[in-house]
Amino acid sequence: MWHINTYNRLKASGISRFIPEFISGKNLLKPLIPAIFIALFSCSQPTVKEETEQTASPPNNRKSLTKIQREIYRDGVTALYNKDYATAERIFKDFIHHKPELAGAYSNLALMHFKKKEYTESLALANQAIQLNPKQSQAYNLRGQLHIIEGEINKAKDDYSKSIELKPKYANAQYNLALLYDIYFQEIELAIKHYEIYLSLLKKPDEATTEWINHLKGTLNNA
Image 1: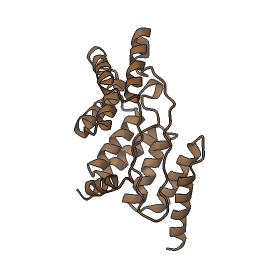
Image 2 (image 1 turned 90 degrees about the vertical axis):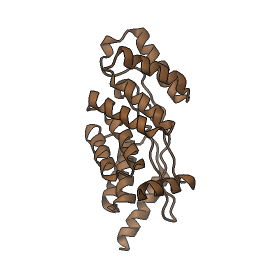
Image 3 (image 1 turned 30 degrees about the vertical axis):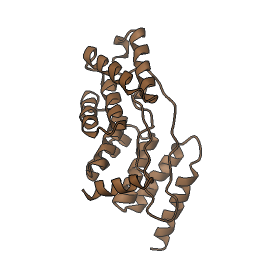
Image 4 (image 1 turned 180 degrees about the vertical axis):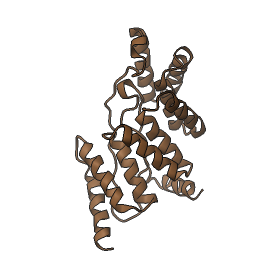
């Protein structure tokens, strides 16, 4: 409960931000996952720039989908990106009805409910997506965020770690795990490690995170 209250206070203060992530194409979710950014010190907390790279055809059972079905799936991703939730929900529910084995449809609906702050529904769908495709790293990352909201910090750590195990170059999962070590566990050396991995994966410099790492290193030197 403490974690939920802290999260709500930070959100109300405007400190927390959410980065949308869309499950589409080869990797289902591109690295746009929502992450909590918390500033507890005088130094500015790093922020992640929203990434826009997308692929639009579902990864599993791709050969079983017709060209038209792939185009419709792409339309669902676009609708989700544009916050046209009614259209996105209709498309992905239709895929679940006709292709219940397609994990990406569940993940996209999980993300839609997350963006609508319908966390119970989002968690149930994320669980289904992972059950259908246990190698879906981005779904673990989304579920980790849901665990943070519920105050299940250790479960969030497990999911972020699993996401990185499956996809070491998944930048936002690296950031989320760093943030967890930083804010919740106070394991600063591990936080710095994952922040630096995150930075190494970016195409453009993230000066805010670099500044934050320097701040953390300063706290270690002064300890």
